Amino acid sequence: MPNLNYRHLRYFRAVALEGSLTRAAQHLNLSQSALSAQIQTLERQLGHALFDRVGRRLELTEAGRIALEYANTVFEAGHELLGTLQGRRSGAIQRVAVGALTTLSRNFQMGFLRPLIGRHDVALTLRSGTLPALIADLEAHALDVVLATGPADRAWGHALVSHLLSQQPVSLVGRPAPGQTPLRFPDDLAGLPVLLPGRDSDMRAAFDRALEQAGITPLVLAEVDDMAMLRLLARDSGVLALVPPIVVRDELASGVLVERCRLPDVTETFYAIVQQRRFPNPLIADLLAQAKHA
Image (tube, rainbow, N blue to C red):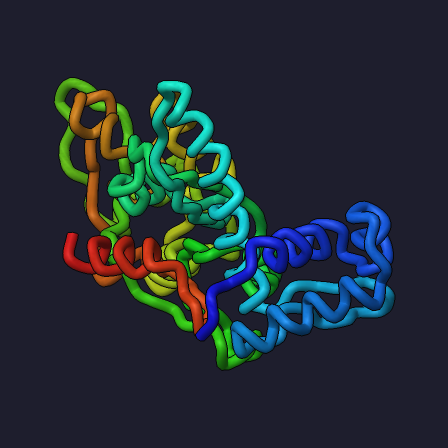
């Protein structure tokens, strides 16, 4: 393949940033037809279409997004060259964008991301939100991976792959007290105040089924979707909370909270959802491999 033309990359980058041949041509002081010809030449060299036309706007294809990342790297390298000659050095930056459910355990997220934390050659973007919104960003290539408590729904498409990273036990935790004895589940929960995850949670559904079968009704003081808030309430209120121990790992280690009982046959699952791509982010493959062997 012939050497890439630096000018072609510059023209491509301008169109990618503007989303329009017309605006990019005006910015570059070129005719639209000349700019279009340069982009077509680059596409022929790369062997891939770089843009899709959506209405009046040009949107990057997957190959186009990869090309833009490399183009940005090329131009950053030019700035780095100047900096190096002036006595300043910096390494190439790899980018990774991770989405996570708003309600997902922060401790689990930190465990997954720990291999990247503190790396000066990695620019890490973290985004939280609802699963539909995060999946939409994943499919738009705005995210490289989505962390969730369940696999992707098949209705969302076959291009999504769900990797099971961990299955965590679920426990009732609370503050320690003198003379405290282990709880018998579910017998001792009759009329006992508890803090529970929201009803959309799989572990909440399993908890409710077990108590319903036993004919026991606890006193539900709060239903909390956010695991970070549930952790704070368990720590500060003195009321039992239903959580995976990983959520309150630090509190259990310090003795602020204790595990009163572990629910039999109930687990919380953690998944990494990725999209099948011709050009996957290599950092994600490394994270998945390390998480599965942790």
